[in-house]
Amino acid sequence: MRIFGWVVLFAVSCAAQTIQIVTPSSSQVVQRGVSGKADIVVSGTAVDAEGRAVEARLLRGIVPVFGFTTKKYGTVEGGRFNFTLGGIPSGGPYRLEVKLAGTKVDSAIDPLFVGDVWILAGQSNMEGVGNLVNVHPPEDKVRMFDMVQETWQIAKEPLHNLPGSVDSVHWRVNAQKEPERLTGEKLIDFNANRKKGAGLGLPFAAAYEKAADVPVGLIPCAHGGTSMDQWDPAKFDRNNPGTSLYGSMIRRVQAASGGKVKGVLWYQGESDANPKAAPIFRDKFQGFIAKVREDLAQPDLPFYFVQIGRHVNDQNQDPWNQVQEIQRQLGTTIPNAAVFAAIDSDLDDQIHVSTTDLKRLGENMAKFAAGKAKRGPTLVSALVDGSTIRVTYSDVNGKLTTKDRLSGFSLHAATGEEIPAIYKEQIDANGSSVILHFGGKLPEGAVLHYGAGKNPYCNLRDEMGFGAPVFGPLPLKQQ
Image (cartoon, rainbow, N blue to C red; front, side, top):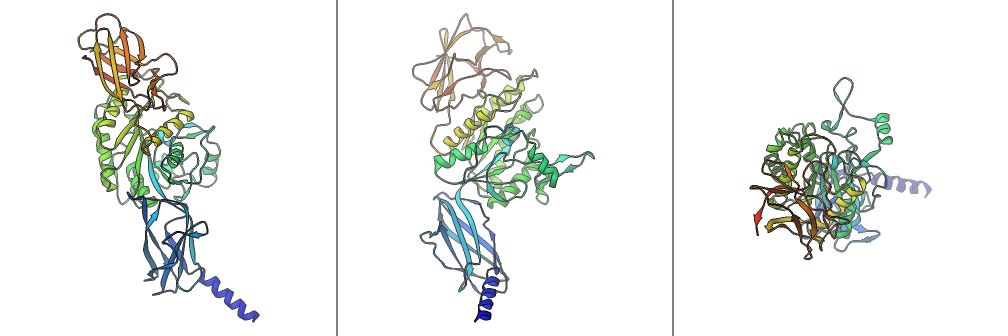
């Protein structure tokens, strides 16, 4: 009997190694459909099991999910199995168990989630260059598809790890002026000595998980200092996708979620705020958004982006404001797109938004994305009435507000010079407009700006903390 018992144990041990699940992955967030449910493709390999039935069940904790108790879903063919679990409700963590009929559990995936997956892309302010101090802590239902191992895991700051990335487009240039991936001790040292890396992605995901009441998956794809030309979809080599930023992003989305995502969070434009790139920024950005939607086969894919904020230097300010104005306009004219202001944010260096305000930005974008807030102050018009100008906004959450004396508006001549005429800026009692009082007579062709220059002081927000975007030059009309 003792020998027989060992034989039984040996047989069970061998059986436990028969099946291997390939998809989905542990910690994965599977994108839900419009119904709030997801169809999960389960695939894997099976040894010495040709023609045998494959069974599966789904549990939440130790309790089987209703409708997903143990039953047959397919058979082993050619050493592989493939079937779909349809209509899994949003939520988790789930435990997926797969086995051959008549055996104990062979393989399991735990945890598994159904929720919303978001792409993080753009340049440094999306990559995250906030100080790694008082960062948002990890949360169980917020996961990320990391850049180094390319596995799903719990999301934690910093989300991006460019030197250790699988894709060569993100690698640093070594002493031989060749791209080189950091591995081993070099990567360990890099990670241990990082002082910056906080972004808006994790605060967004944490706030969105609570507002939408679904798990959230993040796919980090941003790269600091990059221009729209570097993100050009035309540089996507499908045979070597990791050699371009766009190709790397599309490849990672396919690897992480099969190409199914909820939307894109984008923060970029600083590198295009120069005399050469700014005039063509509109066409490049519009074309980029259209191509992302085409390649992911989601023509209505939400695309939410941040308007570039402040830059403390003495370089030409005109292209900076030009890019800001293009972003503001596209945020209201592109369907399922929205722009969010960063001009009122504190900085952690001369150009990068502070960790504290990245949290605010991420949380505000999450509230909007989850349908719990309007997009924030959106310019409607600026009308002159005697010696005042009424600037009207829509999509205000509550009322317009400011912590101290309102600042940020300025009048300019048609040639660009500032006209020192505004002596009072105040929020109207209706809470959705600003009244600007000016002295003297405005010259022909005078225009209005909010946030002119590269480092203005702007402090107009609504009661939920959404800032008013930079605008201008805006032609003035009579009441």
